[in-house]
Image (cartoon, rainbow, N blue to C red; front, side, top):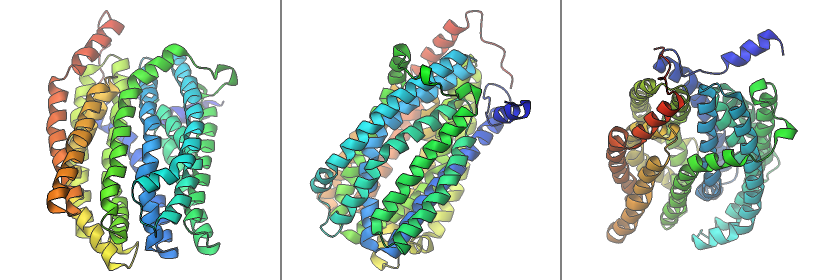
Length: 469
């Protein structure tokens, strides 16, 4: 590789262990925000095409599938956090062998699991839709759409794993480039399959699977271009000690993700009881709400590698400094975005459908849910910092408390009293408030800090290197 190519690869990676934290955080997070924007845009385009090219029933089918798909992907997306944190800590410690062993072990685990999950998802789709009381008019389209997406779920899982590993090395741009290419492919194929060929929701699902496959191909090519992350067939083996560490760090996050994803079908079960227009309104409202959540998501994905690199380098003071700056940046961005969405929610919803009932249902959802992102803008980065230190148990407890301990019981109880779809949304508001109070306590008083300082002391018995601020 030429010196110029090597220098380009270095520029694509952010070293969080030096420089002013907030500038590094923004440089790293901006591609992630653009990645989330691109991902949401092609999801939005697909829903607009389905809503206009099929019907609001097709729109409901697409929206109905999302929570169930997340249940099966969330376990391994959570586990990928283990690889992300390990990669970042080895990168911060400049341990090349650790980086390569983490990479190859993660690929073996995720490819095997992804293929198994594809087969399982296709097999259990009818049972999922039956058990959750899917309306008869929605069932046929939802069945076809979900089975197609499940058949390609391995591509999605492997892509997310590879993107997480590359973020661990400070590279957030590759993910953006991959999604830029696949967004164009997905939108184009969706229009061709749904509008031109008239394949309905099956066309939308097929377009998504093809674009996910291409994202894996793109990531593989980028990995091979970088000596630090180049795959070698001879090294594709399971290193037991690394696999154990991957599961130790990733399993609590995986449990958290599964629990939160399982809440999705429960929530959807209550949503479906209010009719197809409410399902469709919830679907498009969730799509718009995702745009508000993008800064939270980007800063959360930044928090873990930022923390992990600095822990690997023995720089705990930079962890605290970066956490404060993340919260300030995230809160300011979310406040602005939330105000804009609430001000223009009617025309935004109108892009998806002309159905008045669907638009009204979406407005109810957005009015209640969008303001909660201001609190999430504090909770998620702090959770990401704790997680990036390698202590994933406490953020798991926080998330499980919010979803399993508070939100679901509140939905069940309040629905018995009020029998209104607003109950589903207000339960989320209450859970978010309590979760924020809890994570603030954990961040300040939790044992994660003592463990992290002890880990740094063990790695640097003569004292950590001087921090460059």
